[in-house]
Amino acid sequence: MNKSLLVTGGAGFIGANFVHYWLHNHPNDKVVVLDALTYAGNRQNLLGLEDTGRFTFVHGNICDEELVRSLLIEHQINTIVHFAAESHVDRSITGPDAFIETNILGTYSLLKAAKAIWLDEPSSKGLPPLLHRFHHVSTDEVYGTLEPNDPAFTEQTAYAPNSPYAASKAASDHLVRSYHHTYGLQVTTSNCSNNYGPYHFPEKLIPLIITNILLDKPLPVYGDGKQVRDWLYVEDHARGIDLVLAKGKVGESYNIGGHNEWHNIDIVRLVCNLMNEALKYPDVQAKFHLAKHAAKGQAELLITYVEDRLGHDRRYAIDASKTTQELNYRPAESFESGIAKTVDWYLKNDAWWRACLVKAFDEETL
Image (cartoon, rainbow, N blue to C red):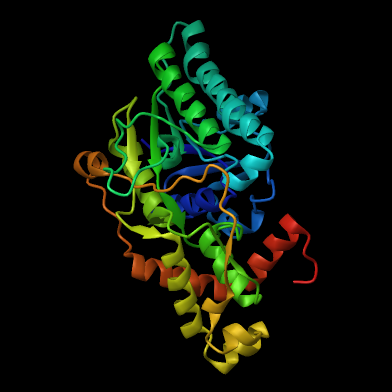
């Protein structure tokens, strides 16, 4: 069956990469993106997709239930892939209201709209439910934190969120599950590890390090930098969701991870080394008007240790055995190749990330 997808948050980092991946790999499917274009949503992430004739962009909010209902009907949507979320932990600490509204109430609004169109309306006419799938994209942060020698998170790990962001995502996971068990909505959920790659908003660790090196700004490292994260190239995440939609069992959750744990400080040093190598050429230095550190191959001197984040989780690690065994999922990109592609993308797309910084932080002098 050909799919007609509604992708929420499809102008954000992971959502946009997923839309590019889907349209490229599913030439008979149609994609509608619904995005509120908040600071991290960027219409430029989707440039050129209209040319496919299979892509529609709608500027709107997932909390607008009537809008969602109308899109499901107008575009005969049979699959929702729900990325839309506030996702930056620091912002959730200083301003949690937006996380409650988008991540919890927004997901609830989507579920209500999907139930109304896919289940209730056919039932009122004596018809069976429409064929459908509601796929919810979540995070490993719902599981809490791990000690250095603890086994990695599995789908059976008890939820123990430690930040307002993680708590809001945990709540949305539970809502999705409840709509399957109570009403029969055909749902799946995926919990992924830290993503990296193109279109990643420059407040997150890897693009922040890349762009701050180019701007000769300090590279902030929380606490001792020994926090551990599992890193996944964003296209591998898209591929994992594809497999869940194709082969995943309805009502089930699937962990999607990179089998790639790194201390934050080691990631920062690795990116510094990659940038030192990439920026040693005079033509590249001239393009970025590089200041002394990057120009001299001394990016690591910009590392600055700062006060640790409140409630900072020490370690995340994903056990993706279930996804591997049931769906034959494995990351296609090695970390070495993925991080090299990422650095190269930011060097070639400085207009993109400079515009992001102006939009988010009003740094008009960049």
